[in-house]
Length: 389
Image 1 (cartoon, rainbow, N blue to C red):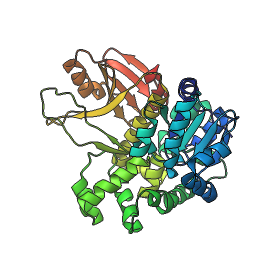
Image 2 (spheres, rainbow, N blue to C red):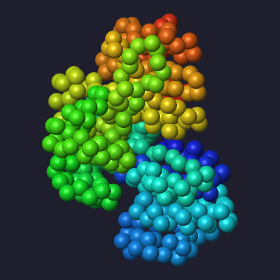
Image 3 (cartoon, rainbow, N blue to C red):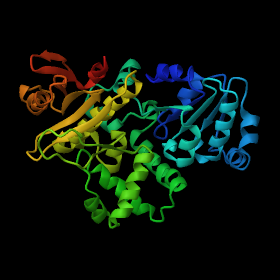
Image 4 (tube, one colour):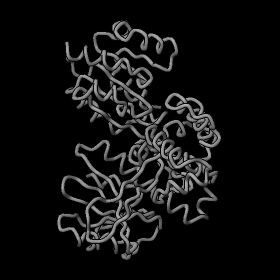
């Protein structure tokens, strides 16, 4: 079953303007399905095919000439052949045609120096994450309870009736560690790397402490830093940076750690839905993770650009999420409770009062009723997409 993705219209708009479109995101987030649906007349080649990969790396010009058709060429898992990008630059400079080359990858390959240099000014980049709450709702697949969604996760395949989510995530992790990571970096001790990912999952919603992570895993701080970068690059971990404005108080400078998918995180922790509901602290952290990443997904499909951060000062005042658009900031508090309390606005309201250009605060909670209160807006967990409307 094809699930309609909110990013479709944005990609189509970009393809009418730029000769190269790049769609990046986690493995199995639906990139291949989406781009083949959007560009059905383009020729398609997957560089996970060993013969195609050898051809692309040894003869980039011959590879592109052989595979492209009059409509264009989709190159899936394009990060495996960085030599292609210089050739694509030559071709689009010689004869630019909007939306002709469509690239996809499960790593943020545009961070690669060769690629960023070759395609600078010639590529529009889009990030496709696993399914959003809004996309699941539109497809009549959204679970009734937030806890169910947290443990099931949002990868498209877990919504196929024959798929067991726990088995899916176990296999996903094995494939990721044994194949994807080794194409980026040769990690000799894969068991230590797996333990490192598990330790990260146990620290969801916490400020990053590399020394603590390294000590707990028995590795050096430099190794922990390198591994964390790998997890970021391959869309496993998301680091939410602290708010950069000085509000007159000493603020936290370390980022907070989240996962791009809570289902994978729950699998790493080894916790079931029933166990999660009983562990309120862990449930609260994972609920916060779910909402923050969902807001990120919604922003990816919006027409405007947004910046995301969190706020915490030396007085332990904390706002879970700050959404910035231009010079305007919106403080957002995230509460897993199904009952709404006016006290949830306290710190977000304080933040709003410190910044005249900020919007009134918003609370997203675990209940199912939206409310317009005099102090700010209340949104239910399954309706956070209203934030961008």
